[in-house]
Image: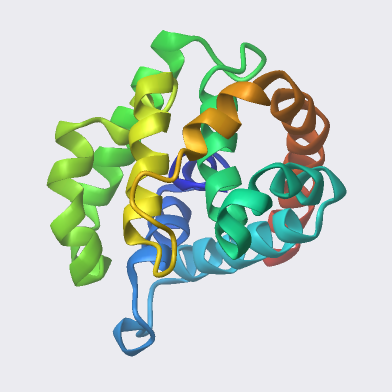
Length: 194
């Protein structure tokens, strides 16, 4: 899952911080955090493990893997945020706007716990409203292109977005099957962390 889903699957401001900082922290940046931030870190790793082993996600990765190989998981993560941001069961545009504003405010309030890479990215994240704007295809295209650009062995211009467009309805079906199961898993896990 990508940033929006990790924030959405958090149960407290501290968990939002922990769930989001993991992808920006290098191992040497790790330190002791307050309990709720630590719980967010645990949730993040559990979400990633559950996602990576889920049948629907494995099927989704197969759509991307002929083109991007081992980077297929990262591509699927971005696509899942698009479907979440457009999921009417989980909120409308106004709900998502309010939620993403809350996430940015939470990160601002807890800056002392953010690793340097997230501190650097946060102004761009807010200015471009990355979380909310994951609901728009043009931003998914940019995010996929960014991943291709950062990948070590993918040629610049690899058209991952085309794979998304050609398989959008199939990927949405995978999301609809997968996400409620992930939510249930996270709720059960969170209850055990208290």
